[in-house]
Image (cartoon, rainbow, N blue to C red):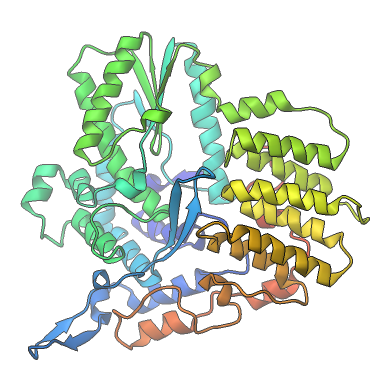
Length: 508
């Protein structure tokens, strides 16, 4: 794998303009954005995006130019549940014109050199290690799978190794990190706070440029950056790397020398040999984050002298301990259901369902308990939005065991009716539509991405700020639905559609 900071400016552009970087959450494989990104990149090249803005005449007769920040819903957003309860995480498909233009700005040679040089400075203290910079796979694994594999090797395995050197560990993370990032702090991070404040209107500073672009896609807001793309992960790392540098300097001013910190995005593991040092570092980190508009999550802050036990996620430990040889499918699914109640939306739950799907894919005969299995599965999905994709795959297999097409649609309608008791089910609808596509029945979906399959004129992004020019027409006319992929799909979803690692035996 290759770190993003090791890329040339040209490679950085190529990497960030990949479809896999444009969105890093699961969508059915027939949604394809690569052609759209490439056509926009070819059209705008190095031209300023403002060349495509719409002009209008105001009430006083003056001609003015619109800006994206004057409009709502510039990005397309899903609200996805984080904990199966009340924590909602907005995943966004950034307006492709803004996305491509921002990538072009960041990957200009002089700007890229500034970013890389500054971020290498953030990493100057070897005792504070950032392990979450975007990476590109150099083998058959996807970039996303490589990132998760990197987490396992660097964070979990690295934490266990540090148990040889340290007696105490403090775990903590930032509360609502992406939603709380102050956009002006991007310029502070890249150019120092003093320089950024003295030159806040200087469009030659790449930190200011990134700030303006994020405001443009966020109705002018300065709090929060969109979540759901490698580009935004990278921008978050700029701010969090700046916090690493500030923390390093503050720790240096104390007498603490015996420590190491592993950071994976907004998650921190602080290793020391006495609890006082750990608590002081935590206090210093809190002060730094407050100055950046961020705060630690007190409910997820834990200090312990059991370094190895606390280096492994509790859901993983509990799943390992719960492993029992249960012969019947209903018993296995009930065990997974019980686990989902204890560890909702966890990585171990996804892994358990991956294995269950691999086990049932060879089933061919009708089963008397198929409705019971569907009911258990749907209840797991109801409380765990993270597993919608693999849940849909398992559901597609269960439905294939039912001979009556009318009965299948009746069950699907019942499932949708159940989920409509919840708010924000657009992401679920996308995956239910994947199941329905290869049947001879139709179900109406409200989610705009679902409607794109049958209504080409449905718009995902508000482009009213664009003039009626080539760029706007390109965004309107370029299809993001690959019909050939749909034609070649089977009614039963394939493992490769939803599994991160395919046959690779790597723990998620």
